[in-house]
Length: 150
Image (tube, rainbow, N blue to C red; front, side):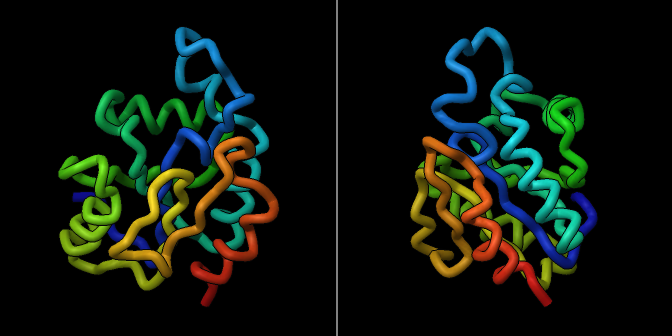
């Protein structure tokens, strides 16, 4: 089990760390799908709050954790990728996030969920829903900081 952090960003990838315009050639790999603009905004949030990343994207099911971490680092991400959520039911990502939270000896004091296509019925107050055509944008920062702030 990964070490707990006081602040966590549960992170989807497609539609959050990229957009429909980022890359259409799936053979180029995930690195090309991590848009530098979205990475820069994630870095800004992580540096302002000290939050770490827990990947909730379905990419966690097809890519080994070490490779996910290396991919984010290669894309310029400075946020620590701490862990991934458990595989329970990808259609109910909020339940996977809840399971991760329950499994922590010290749950985070604050967290936010960044996703573009899930409503998170069990955790709606923690969701910042991004626009899939832009991904994580400057317009999302204030909502994220409000959830992660002290």
